[in-house]
Structure formats: structure tokens, C-alpha cells
Length: 551
Image (cartoon, rainbow, N blue to C red; front, side, top):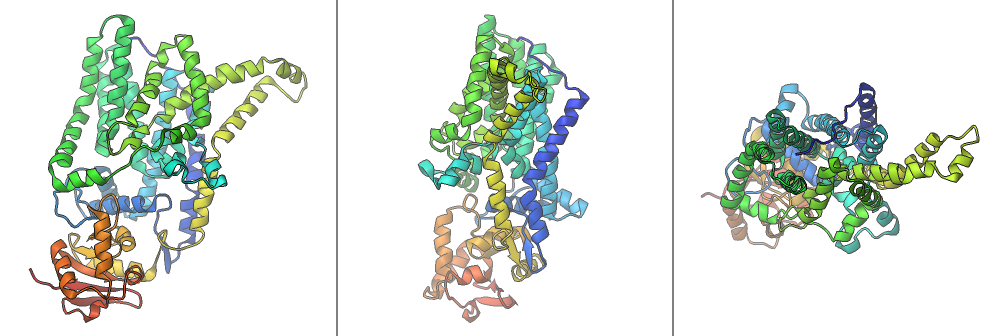
């Protein structure tokens, strides 16, 4: 295989990267910092702002690790199932919290900072691998860090449900560097693993270097332990890249093919492990079947990458016309990803992860070679450059700043909107002292495997603070969540029979019933009058009952 461009990175460049990484990390942490400042003993900030339910689920997984678990069990469903190494990343974060003496939320956000920084360093390493031009690297890096889509326009025009979905630059963290840093650390680390793995394996194939292929294998193993389905991306990209290079060179490079296979072996074992459980275990199989993260209408992707995508198209045409074969892998990645986004797979849209990086690389190439440089040579700029206050370089920088600003309009609105939510303390972002006291009682007096029946809203946070399992609490992880939501509503309805309630408690092995504001909103059932519910905790707002229904 041909040797790709491998641009060296000087110390000054790394300092520039670290500076802008610090800037974007500061920006994405504004709502979290505001929540920490607004938090009081009576109304405590829960640590989650963006995708609160999902973030709470990560905290709940960390709680399992903090309490000593090495195998993950779904905390949001009552069905019995074996523990697995799925979500090992968050189990390890929970153990780190215990060792460091930090809160789960504090450890999570520390991991966000660390993994976010690693991700942005990996982004620059990837960019430098494919272009020696510092200006292109920097523009591409800033586009990865700050650019979004047309979500701002949908917000301002009130078209937030356009074509049946919110704009992807608001809801798809894998799709944008800004959202990756804003959301969860595992996505940042997986993105870094994908980018570095692709660079190392491609370089290993080009040089027939086993060590680089093994480095790529280690990177892909990290990705597999976080989310095995992400590996569809390097499999598709490296496979097609090998075929294209073989056709172009008119002979297959079997050594390179062997190195690609070698790089996939360790992560392949993890994929096989996950495949076994999600295929043959009924609980994990049901979880996978209902965990639907399908791609929206294709026009959403067009709107989500309109500015950057238009420039990337220009840059791609420029690269192909000039036979820049060193850009083969980024071009192939962008050709493969539209197919991956609509393969028959439940988590389709997650496969956009990392694709923004080659997109921004080609956009930066298109901008520099087809817009900025021709603009700098234009008659208008030459005329304006005669004025001592203007220079061609200065005007190009100004034009580039306008580009990045126009491509990044959604993110300030997102941060502003979330900050406004945080500034108005209320559930589910904040939790009352009464709720926390009740959950702390559960944590101190019950076992982690004890299942608690409560409303959906309570159940989403209960495993975080109390560490118990719940019957209902997360749409994707509670098996048959809609049916259970209806059953929970019936349970708290005063008109339901005690015989039905007893059977429900026995069916799911419920150990405790919690009653608080969320539960009272479902109905006026009085558990204190039920002989099979023994009161064990009571406050002005919350009560907890031990279930005594017998076998």
C-alpha cells in the first residue's frame, strides 16, 4: 500500500491545540458549572443537564462499580439476567470514584474533561496525518470543535419537529465534536480510539509495520469495550480502502490485509462476547430489540452538515482532480458512512461517530484551496491590500472566522437554553432534600439487588443515589417499558384491587414500594392501609414500604 502523508506536529502546534481545547471545554461546561453554583442542600444539582435520563443511567452504572461490581447488570428492569462486561468503562469510573473519594457526578465530569482533551488531541493527530498544511489543520480542528448544523434555524422558526425529528445537531452527540465534549466521556474516548486506530492501522499497512497494526488493535479494543458496534466503521473503511488501493496498484497487498485482520482480532473477541449475550440471553436480546436509535430522514443529515458539507464536497472534488491519493481513507470514510447510517441495525445513527473529522478536513481543504487563496488573489483584495490597515493574510483570517461563526450558530443557543433551564432549579435537573433523604435511606438499609417500585421519573434517578434496581426508569433499558408504565399507573390508582397489586409485586419480585410526589400524581392509593406493605420510612413528602406478600 502507498505511504500516506504523515505530517509532523511541532510543539507550538500542540500548544495551540491545547489552548483551543481548553476554550471549547470551558464553553461546554458552562451549564454544569452553573448547576454546581446554584446547588443548595435543600435543592441539589444532580450533575446532568444534557440528555438527563441517559446521563443518570451512566451514573447508575458507576454506582454499581463503586459498590464493588465487576459485571454490569441492568438497573432499570426487574427481569433476572447475568452480569456482563458491557459498560465496563462506567464500572471502572465508579471504582475510580471510590478510590479517589469523589462523588459519582464529580468523577464523571472529570472523566469528561480528560477524555475530551484526549479526543481533541486525537482529532489533530488525525488531521496532521493527512495534510502537512498548518492552516488546513487549524481550520479543520476549529470546525470539528465548534461547528454544528442548521438546528439554530429550526429553533428560531419553531420547526423543531421537522420531518419527524429534532435537528441532529441538538440530539446526536456522536455527530459533532462540540456535543461529544458536552455529553458523555465514553463517546469522546471511543472517538479518539477510532481516529487513532485508523491512522495507526493505515500507517502499519503502508509500511508493513506490525507494531503500528498492534497499536491500532489496542485502540480498537478500547472502542470495542465501550461500544462494539462502532467497529463497523473501521471494518468498512479499512476494507474498502484496501480494495481501492489494490485496484489502483493492480495487485492485492496481502501483507496489508493480514495486518488489518490482526488489528481486528482483540476487538473481535469482545464483539463475539457481546454478540453471544445479545443473541442468546432473552433479557439482553429484548433490550437490544427495543433500543432503537434509527437514522432520521436523510434531509436531516443534509441540514446537519450543510455548511461544512458543501465545502467538503468542494474539497473532495479538488482532492480527486489533483489525485491526492493520500486522502483516500478520509474520502472512503465519507463514502461509506451514508451506507452505514441506513444499514438494518437498531443503532443506525450512532455510526456517524467520527465522520465529522474527515468531513471538516475536506471542508478545510476546499476552503483554503478553492475559496481563501483565490479570494486573496482577487483584484478587490489586491486593491484593498494597498491600504496599510489591511493585509491579504488578515482578510483571509477574518473570512475564516466568519465561516467558523456561521457554521457554529447552534451550539451557543444550546448552551444558552440549557443554562436557562439550570438557572430555574426544578426536577429532573435538581433533586429535593426530601427525595435525597429517602433514597439515602434505601442505600443504607437495602441491598443493591432489591427491586423498588416507583414512578418512571423517580425510577430514573433512584439507582443513581440508592443503588437499587427499579421496575421502571429508562425507556431503552426497562424491558417492555410502556406496559410497565401502565402497570405502575394502575398500582397507584386507588380503584385497583389488592389482589392485582399482590400479583404484580410477586410477579416482579418487588421488595420495596416508594411513594412520593411523582407517585401521588399517578393516583390516590394509600399503601399504609395495605396489610402486605409494611412502612419502614416516612417523611413529610416520601414514604417507603417493605413488601410482604409471601412466595
